[in-house]
Image (cartoon, rainbow, N blue to C red; front, side, top):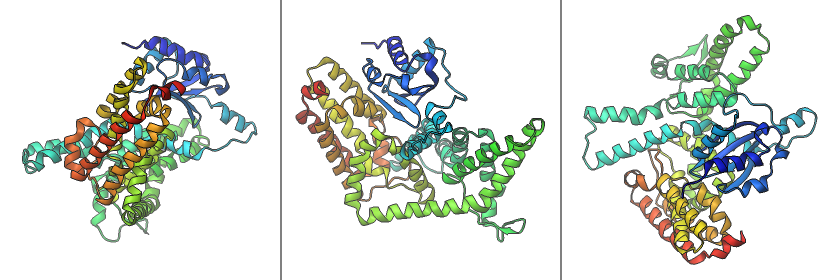
Amino acid sequence: MAKDYKALADGVIANVGGAENVASISHCVTRLRFKLKDGAKADKEALAKVPGVLKVLEASGQLQVVIGQDVTDAYDAVLANYPLNAAGEVAADPAETKAAAGEKKKFDFAGTMADLVSGIFMPFMGAFMGAGLLKGVLVLLTTFNLLAKDTSTYAILYAVADGTFYFLPMFLAYSAGKKFGGNPFITMAIAAAMLYPNFAALSSAENVNFLGIPVTMISYSSTVLPIIVAAWLQSVLEKFLNARLPKVIRSIFVPLIVMVVVFVAVVLVVGPVTDIVGRAIANVIKAALDAFPLVGGFLMAALWPVMIIFGVHWGMVPIVMNNHAVLGYDYILPLTVGTNFGIAAAVFAISLKSKNPETKEMAATSAVSAFVGGVTEPAIYGILMKCKKVFAVLLLANGIGGAICGVMHVTRDVMITVNGLTLPAIAAVYGPWGIVAIVVSLIAGFLAGYFVFNDKMMEEA
């Protein structure tokens, strides 16, 4: 049955306080994200009951409406029927206004960090995962001798697959520049300088210095932390200069001063310091997982869906990318390789067992979303959080798969999406024990959904 996105849009807008109360709207993979002029005008209870809405959350000054895999259609329907600000500058939210007036504002560190990380990494995830999947396909083709590494065909395809990773600072520069409120093209210019061949060649030179100050050279390709810190420094310096320089010379001298000062700061301080910090983070976590692989693997996989609920899973993204840059491989996300499959199997079992047509349809579409697309929020918010016993058993089941990966030291040297369509690439990248973890999660998840679920759970919820 086709969804009525116009009705969904009308219901959502009516319960966020009307179009006039919306400062801006955006969306991610599963959620409509509203910045409201007055949060008190939103009726969250009524909003949660709108057909098509899975859950309503508040984080970092945003009202987030979880829609699921249909979020793009819902977003388009909202914009087609209401003249809302879908991009650009937005008015300060009510909490900031109150704080400016003297009221104490409670700082939500976890929510702020989750919003920051998702805002920086989410915009280019499509290109990033596409490149990662192509890398996995190339691994598969070369493993089975279907394509030789010394051919021009391989070189051309590998350029597509590896270019995104090599020039990662460029992607981060644009999104981090926008997120911190600086000029993203100036941030990209700084990233371009970090990756410039002649500058990179100084890594092999002796006694590198800037105006007599010794420079510790590092490789900036594929790095994460240096350009993010640079983007923050840039935004601070830009605001400082824009507030003090005459408007007539601002457009000329602000970019010049910012590019030179921030890049020199990166070369002399930010790069070397973040390199040390990045290596320390990677080595400490690696040492902990090496010392307690069973416990670490179990907890990581079992708690991953819980992290998704609170949005804190985004905090793992910089660490994972840092691992790839520092170590050349990652050992954190491989622990969770079975979780998407376990979630998909559990809600699929629920769709088979339930006698409620609405529950069957929601569970079936959520299972497809999790298995085919690797998007688990519809399953978690729409089904599993309402079936707490099923969810609890599923977490334990996923933990077993994570423990297997931890004990067998499953790693990956390629970032790829984890879903049913990428199973051949997963087998090549994660190895046989990754597949074992997936099978364990699939079987245990299905059993949890089929034998623990009953329709009373959804009715009571």
